[in-house]
Image (cartoon, rainbow, N blue to C red; front, side, top):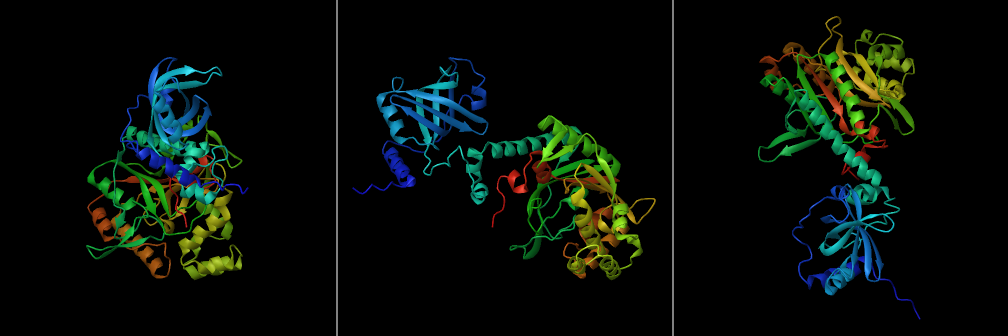
Length: 485
């Protein structure tokens, strides 16, 4: 006899759903929960509770069923006896429920003979039907594409993913509270901008139909946050999305979360002290230690090394970068010294692009331990304040570890004449083909001409920092919904 072909799981569940419809509402409007699963674990035996969540396991033993329900903070066992429910309710539950369904259970807590804390049901209701099965929980999701496209399944079946995303929430909450305690005000600035500025990056372009106006998604909130400082708010921060139309790799996303803050009357040294202490306190709060491991590399945040950016670049060049008057001269020297691949050197469109390329290719990846990199050429960042002793350099630093730039900060330029000259230099680089340079922002210059106090600002890569402290190999692993092709 030919073996009967097994019906697809979806069809079986759909039939159950249709049978449930005949008995009334399938998708309930609410459930009167008295405790979360985490709260229920603190109850005593015989305490009553109404718990709800997604069914993750079911084991039938004739007139008795044991199961587990899940919420984001964990699981708890429940038991249902035919002797404790009306016969029709028990039969309906047995015929209808599947792993993946949401249910509500009311009853009393007790410990089983094996010592497991359990909710003994006096009533149970199916709240929502799952028409498609969950992945087998023991194995979880092994398909990487499915893992990111159906993040909810990865979170349900993968404890590591669940813990990473919960760590993200805890980290954002800690940072907000830390900054607010230090006197910072959280503000919001536009994402749609007429001039995408504040960083060297290629923007996303869009169009405002009603105003018939070309716009760009922000690459950084910097210029608007400085205008908030001009309002009179001494310390401000924003934590939100930035967009840069560039390549994607383990440490880069085109849509990412950035924290920026600005403090009036600070210089970059104040920011060094503040951000390093914040990172240490954040690690102690979330990880309980300043010594962590990232991809088999031991990191120690109890201290921060120092690197002079300009000295390191000049050492690679075998010359002083300020001795090169134009891009072609620097290219010729780099080609002669075989400093980088010839095609990389020839493709660069400006001196800042060449110097940045040298740092990224020859230095950055070798920085493993937490390091403060300081003393940058002024042409690298047109929004930074020039050093008083040498106007060719800027009072800027970055915090880098495991080859990743986590923090970028500097004393801010508030001189409108120097700012205009820096903008015009950027515009010239853009005209020469450097897509990461930006245009002159007249609205920002107007605000600067009305006066701004001395200040220091800082950008902090939320996704990058989290990926490292959570020991996750890519930024996609630490966000809820990564972009997929």
